[in-house]
Length: 323
Image (tube, rainbow, N blue to C red; front, side, top):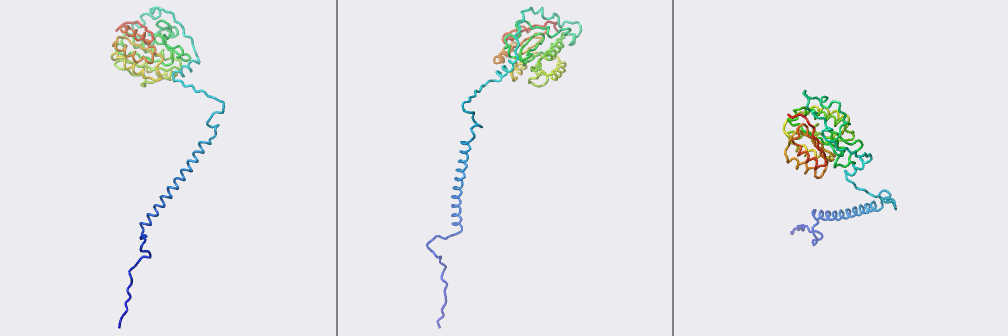
């Protein structure tokens, strides 16, 4: 007997001619569609933001950004120096002319020549600062009379200077320890600082082998009563030691901002001739008067005269006994 056996045909896809729809093909189609949709959405968002930005820029309220029609404004630009002069010019004062008087008539002879060691009271007995005058010529020679504020000015060893910002460069070398010179410096320096107007500013730079600011900071100090009292104590502690090298002190002074209005340069001896050229080069731009004072020993007088003449300042000698 013949037996019939069913044989299962092999699997055939419905559409044998089309590609097989696998997981990776479906994932590729999804990524392409998502990318196109993302690009379209990004373009739409950027267009909306651009339209909003244009609206904000074009349709801002005119009154908040622009002046009313017909109104004009002028803008003036000025430097710090010009503004300072305009402020200071609100209170003016005349430039008093001081007649030429021989130095020996205005400086007490043998100011430092006393038989006993000098103290502050022994140095300047019965001397009223108002009675002291400059070493000759008009006060503030070579300096703008309008630079100082109300009550502007300083007096150091009887030498007048005008302005609001004063630099005291003082010699504390070893030779200052003789003849009562360091005591004379302390007394006159304290007296000068104490007489400054409260709107004035000052700095004291002592020098010997180098220079250092009294008070520890190379900056301007307002001449307020509290600061005057503080500096009186530091001035009383000045000691004489070392050599005579003023160049670091001048370099420190000319680095100050705002610029100094006037300098006092006091020394009791001779220093290197190169100092003159060094100081003049620093002062070429500032053009501030440097009032030079020789105390006791006038061996440095020729150099001091050159500095004072080329800066528009004055030179004064305070006589006294030598070492």
